[in-house]
Length: 312
Ligand code: 8YV
Image (cartoon, rainbow, N blue to C red):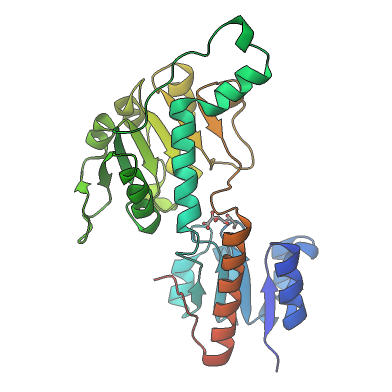
């Protein structure tokens, strides 16, 4: 019997069509209320295909008693009930590594933009303000202090790029990395006090929820810049908005938000903030590699019963 695949949310048209063309697929987003549909039909599915964005919740898994694998597009798996999957022996795959370059590139782009005020100066030129006077001086990037929260695969690529800018790098993780060439700072507040830039590349989820709180933002201070390419949930967004509007934080470059795609209105009027719509992995090259990795995981599970890049 051909395995039945539940496709949770749309990716590119290319991906959706290939998946539906090669397998017996039900597109969940076309079925009305998801949980109501799964109440009735959930027992018929063997495999879930999803993404970091759409995930696979515990409520969904409860209604999918026969699922044996979840193949996800993206490196983050905070939207997937991995603990439930583990208890039930469901394999979960994701797409690590292929997006490291692009997310690290974006982190550096946001950092440079916030510091040198590229987006703000673009607005200045377009508004016709230049003839009336020079753009205010910005802040230097090279040689500054970079604090990385979460020195995993993406964090290490940010650190390597920072080396090209002669930056000093220190990092905070829950545990010290065995192989790291960079200084470990067990105290997040101390790292924020030390750093000119604090870049977030840690996973989302309960363990890092609101890790970046008001005291951390105050420690980073009025000349400090926060860069978030991790998850919106890592930052207490209300505290961030307050720190930025009250001038207690120098600036922020944000690719992710707590309730994205909704962004707090207060951020729209701030010139020291650069806002991006979760584009970390969003290049044609990287997204294609991520798609290929999902198909490779799915095929490996179908052929040998084991995905290639499991969430561990
Ligand atoms: C995803 C992401 O591409 O990989 C992740 O964890 O957040 C992005 O790269 C995007 O969320 C699509 O699911």
